[in-house]
Structures are given as structure tokens and as C-alpha cells.
Image 1 (cartoon, rainbow, N blue to C red):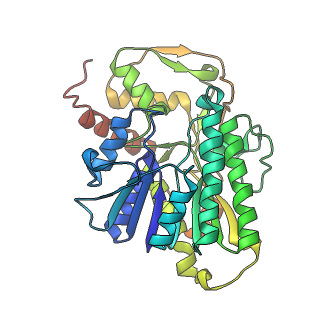
Image 2 (tube, helix red, strand yellow):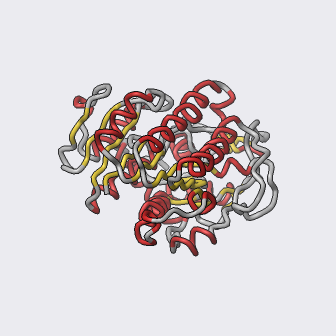
Image 3 (tube, rainbow, N blue to C red):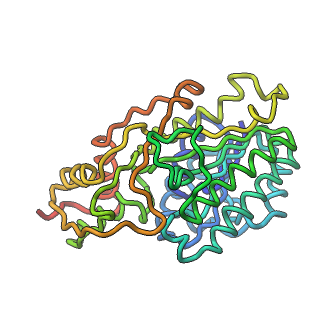
Length: 350
């Protein structure tokens, strides 16, 4: 297939792109490489996929030196005309939209960034699908849409009408917008509600990366809600496996050639580990891998945050044979090994 992956210099986008390339798909990656976090990490991911920093320029294709089936372009989802030009030329089978302004807490500081990227940008993607006969749009939603829902585990059948951050509200809006476009214009959309993704090349604003950085510097880590938190930590390879199964699903099931109802054209799935972990246990595993007892600073709950997440993944399991397999022990160790290698840490002081 020919696939457009937006956010391809991001954490999940990078890993998905690499998987698709290695199995032989033709991929065009798109990312605006903004400075929400260290751009060197984004360029590092691109370099791993054979895209040199020097070759990247605005709205011009860079061709991978490692994968002949990969080209990358720096562009923004807000540029509708350019997005339409790419889609008209490339004639993609699938768009996987992972580009978004991420982060719950940052949405309290810079709300406009979320409207520009997550609402206007997503609308532009939908318009491109509408105008270019895109067969399937797979897009990133978030476990944050469950908001104040306290039923556990979170199920796709639960109400998601009480978000508690603007980030969550934009992701819920994406689901509603996608359903509307599927209904009106008869193309397939699948939203994936990601649950606390972690692993090598992760984002610096996420807990594992942030904690590791501060622990190694001898700084205290902030533990919110006094440690009374649970998260459905999901390793990146399990997430990519799930995304690929969703990308491939309509082909294996033959639904590209049918005209089903709008309800079957538009769907949303939880994609997580399905096994929540107490935050203090997560920190203990990190301490064990590092061989360091960290300095803990207990803090109250932050605005926009929730005490626990837990994914009911039965729908993904039954529909796509999704079976996450990576334990927390394996995942944390893989991240630490990557972190030490990437930052050239030869040894860790005890």
C-alpha cells in the first residue's frame, strides 16, 4: 500500500513508519517538527529512518538513504492547499494521522495550539480524504476522552461527554468529526484511543522519560495525587502492532469494495495493555532498572489529570486479533537501554 503517516517524526509515528517500510509499504511521512519538545530527538528519529537533518526543508521531499520506499516532507496540517496537492499527486490508499499537539498539561498553557493542530488540522485531513477517495483514515484519539468517567475498565461503550482538558476535548471532537465525514462521504475512519504509550525514542514530557532524566541528574521526581495513580502503560511495539492490524483490517476483510452503513464505516477502539499498573510500582521498576533509589516529591493532583486509566481491549482483540505481549519489565528495560545509548551514558553512578 501507499500510506501517508502524519507525525512521522514523532514517537509513535516514527515507530509505525519504520515498521511499514521494513515490510515493504510505500510511505510518505509528514511532520512540522515543531519545538514542543527537543527537535534534536525528532531529527534523531528521522535519521534512524535514513532522513538526514540537512535534507529536510519546508514543503520539499527528502528521500531516505536507508529505505527507497520512504520520502519525508516538513509541512503543517494547517496548510490545506499543500495537503491536497500531496494527496492528489500520491493517491494514497490509507492516511494514518498521528500528528497532533500532544499533552494534557500544555493545553492549559497554550490552548490555541490544540485548536490549530487538532481541530483545524484534522478537518484538513478529512477534507483531503473526501476529495481524493482515500479508502481508510486511521487516526490517533486518546484515553483522555474518558475524562470524569469512573467506570473501570474504560470501554468504548462508556460515555465520553465529560472531558477535563482541552486536549481531551479536541480528541473527542476528532471522533465526532470523523463519524460525520464517514456518514456524509462514505469513506472508512478508525480512531484509536491510545493508553500511556512508552518505549525507546519516547517523548520527554512523558513520565518514563522525565523520571529517568531527573533521577540520573539526582533531582527529585514529582509524583502527583500523592502517588495514588494507576496507568495502563502500553509498550510501543504493542501499539504499532495494533495500528498495523487496523490499517490492514479492511483489506483482509474485503470491506474496501463494499458500501456498509456509516456505523460500520466509522469506529473507535481502545488500544492499550489492558493491565493497569500502580504508579509507585512503575517507579519501583524504573529504580530497579537504573539501580538508583530516587527522591520522591509527593504532589496534589494536577488540573486536567485523572487518577487512573484502564483499557478494555476486548473489541480490538476480537476484531483484529490484537494481543499485547510486552511486560512492564521488558518495556522499561528497553527504554533504559535506548536512553543510555542515545545520551551516551557509559555507566550510572550508584
